[in-house]
Image 1 (cartoon, helix red, strand yellow):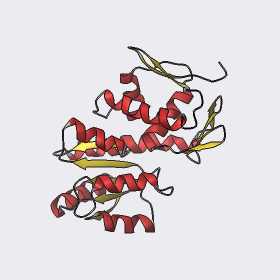
Image 2: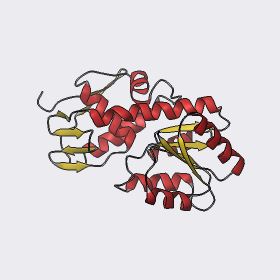
Image 3: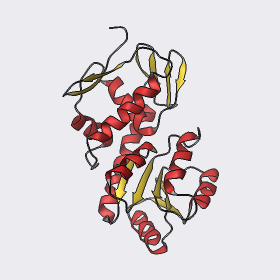
Length: 229
């Protein structure tokens, strides 16, 4: 039974989320703020974190960034819940490397679909063999990425994006195709979401000034090329 940690400061919403997720077959732990969430996470990691943006004290956005910077919680799936809807906030949320973004008000059915999609995308990774292209290597089992033996630290979305490219070397994918295959058909995100994560992935892979394996195909999309030609 997958475990979901809900972090929501409004008691009525927190209880509603808990009831609906338990009904959907999840084991649910629920806390009202970031401090209590960190205490829960220090005890054991859930399968997914459902995180409200606006929390008392430390915001959900700040907590998400901290979790992504820590080795133990870097790969924890996170869905952000917020009442904010403008584009700048969506990009800021993505910069925190959350896996998905749900805007209030939302239906329990929509939320359960989003959670299912995130967990489904994560599930196959542990059973995959290591993937490689030139000096680039990705091990889904250990969630490790290296370039010429240099460790590359990626957020979960960038990891999935790179994994998809490595499974389909040299193939060009449009932004629409990447949204569907990496984020899932349940995601309702802007096309520029892909560009945000491509830039982040490219910056991480090329941190040592090596050759750029990611290729931008103007007016079409992106592809991963092997350095071996």
